[in-house]
Length: 150
Image (cartoon, rainbow, N blue to C red; front, side, top):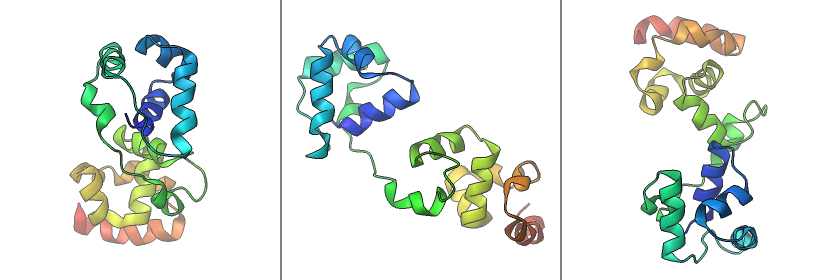
């Protein structure tokens, strides 16, 4: 099982190791052991029945724990220079929820065309709502381009 998946679920659902242990019906020490092995490798060997129980209690497919996640850390310096978001997963979650500062950050960095590939066509019409979060010089450039994309 990929431990990064468990960490992501814990973060999204605001859970701790004790809660994960309870859902998986194992000891908290076992869950702590999963995380202690994370530095050595990004996966841990877990019994199938443990994965199935955890997945059932979380209302997820067991396969989700067996799929490796893309490491987004390499994008941190590009999108998180001011620590508006603590990590890339938080930034992506904010994008998925169409939080205006996150949308602004995406367009500020990538521009309209590339941001459309990430979010979809809804990014351009929302420009008037999130443009105040874009740095002034870049905002002026984007305001010039906006009519061409809108």
